[in-house]
Image (cartoon, rainbow, N blue to C red):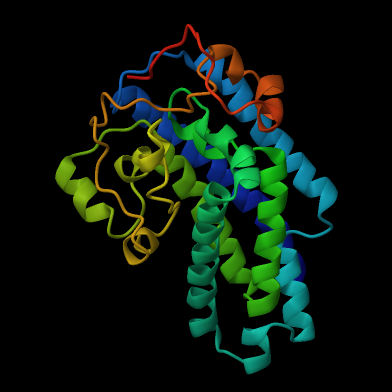
Length: 279
């Protein structure tokens, strides 16, 4: 089972990424939630370029994927679930939920610790929000996130199947909840009890720091409600809220080279900046 699952890992994740991205872009064109001021041609090269760079660096620096690491642990009986002999019907859903909780806590940490926020704010510096924003993370943040994920897998002994399910879900929901798509309010109200919706997550990308420090979930929506970080709606409304970071309002900051250097830059907003407000 080891070789088929390892070979399936990359194929499934790439297929899901391409399929969900295409579906979200089609939805964004057919029924956008917000009128966007910044053209895709200015934003997408940086967003997709950094996603490709992230994937390359993870493959180069980490000798195994999360699935491969989980298979190694299973073979050696390491980790709490493996040591306890937990049945698959319990270990797989538990592994998915615990990994999702770990990503939520990691996200909170990257907002709370100044040095980590300098890395993570590049994700928030996008001047618009669409499906490609869901893949826009600084390479150093991606590498740290991978290390944290492997640590959780090691301690718990998360089954390899659970890791694959979690990776696929996180990939898909990250593009979905960043997408600039409209849906009926009633559908959003129901769906946000099951998964983080675009309207729920969009609040997190507000330029207002009080709203930025809310709705940290990417996949499961329960953690924000449980830990008191849930915010229902942005104060200015979804159509008028400003997206982004005050320090990086210049559209030139959307270039890949500028994105990579943002953690090293001053986090104070410039005195004058001829930039769109995002509203």
